[in-house]
Image (cartoon, rainbow, N blue to C red; front, top):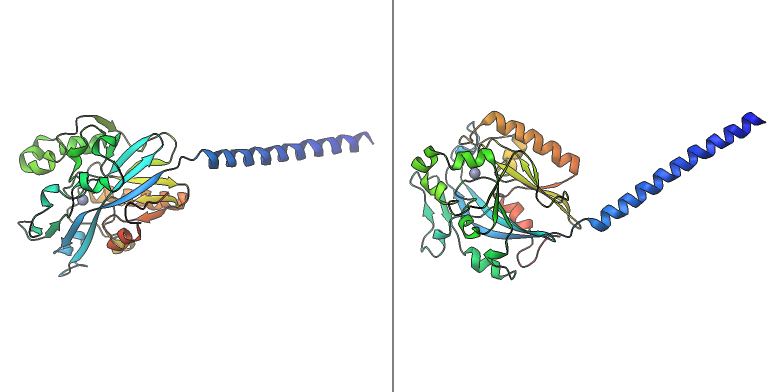
Length: 292
Ligand SMILES: [Zn+2]
């Protein structure tokens, strides 16, 4: 009799613990849901890149003789704690040019229709409304209007900062260096960075395309988790077949970043958007509409 009472008591205790755990999990879940910050993501047209020599985008001859139209988006992320610009489109000097501009080597023909200041009017913002700017990397088609955000803090991986401000860069690629020259409020990053401290806007370190390339993870209340690729993968075939451009800074690093990216996307069940993919660009709501 004693034994069975003890057994019953034990059973009750175990049951109570289980119930308690369930209750706790339920509370945690509802708290998480309630407290997840309401973010808005606006996608803007930062111009068009007509790639005349697509072969540059693979180490092998997969794209010999082909060309491709690339989108060139930039993004505004509004978080209750502040505003972030992700990437900065093509140079604004292209706006108003009578003809698209073709690079000296003929590889790219680029154009941009509108300036940042004008584009921001559509959502009632000015360049002074930004707390942060982060670039996936400092190539010319991602840093176009960066200098306009000189009052914002530039969130930049230290490796990218050292690369773009090197003496070699200033001498041989002055245009790239000059594109970020007015960004003087600088926060150098080592690895991943949670911008607002709540896991909803996270810069993920993904080097290889350049020494300090990064991608952006967003956790939206309605749309769910998503990743903006930067130039880790330029278009869907490159992601599917793991093709790496011949001009990437480090192939081994790129491969490691691709592993990280795919594993992270899977872990978070995140939708992936390739920033240069015209198809992915077209999936985004047109400003002033947004994802949230
Ligand atoms: Zn690039």
